[in-house]
Image (cartoon, rainbow, N blue to C red; front, top):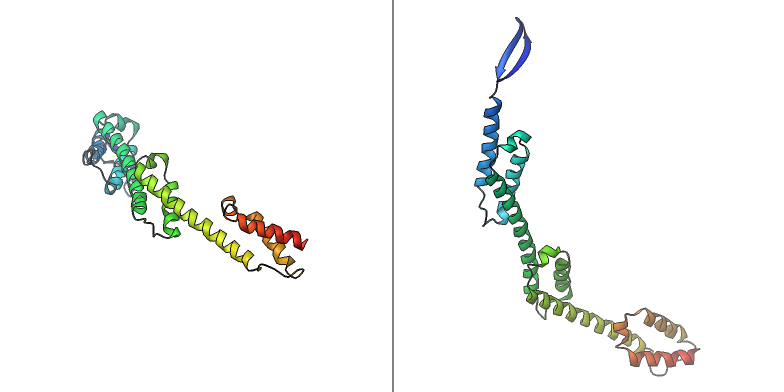
Length: 212
C-alpha cells in the first residue's frame, strides 16, 4: 500500500497519499547500492578509491534488514572484496612511505633522518611491515647502527675530554670535586660508552685514590 498521512485543514480532517510504495522504495535503495558497488574497480583499487568504497558500504548499511535481503549476494561479496582490497592498498601505501624514507638514506644522512625512518617503521603494524622488503629492513638496521656508533663515539670523546682537562698531575685537594664529579658521571654512562673508556677509567681510578 502507499504511505498516507492525516492532517487538519480549514475544511476539516483530510487524508493525503504520499511517496512510493514500500516495494518501489526498497528497489530504488537496493539499486543505488548495486550501482555504487558495480562502479568499484575491484582488483585494481587505489588509495583514491577509499571514499567510494566507504560510500558504498554506508549505502548498504543504511538499508533496512528486509532491503538487505534483496541485495544480490554477488554485490555483497564484491563489496566485501573491495573493503579487503582497500586494507591491502592502505597497508602497501604505509609500507611504501617507509621504504621511500629508507631508500633516501645514505652514509651521509644525519641522525634525525635515520631516527625519522626508524620511528616510521616501528609505527607500522605487522600487516604493513610484511610489505617492507628484507633489503629495506637490512638497510635501515645498518643505518641505525651507524648512527648509534657515532653517538657512542661522540659521548666517549666528550667524557674523555673532560677527564683529560684535569691534566696529568692535577692539584689536590683543589681538584677533588672535579674528580668526584667525573667518577659519578662515569657511572651513569651507557655500557657501550664505558667500553670505549678503559684508559680514562683507569686514570680516574688512580686520581680518585689520590684524592681520597
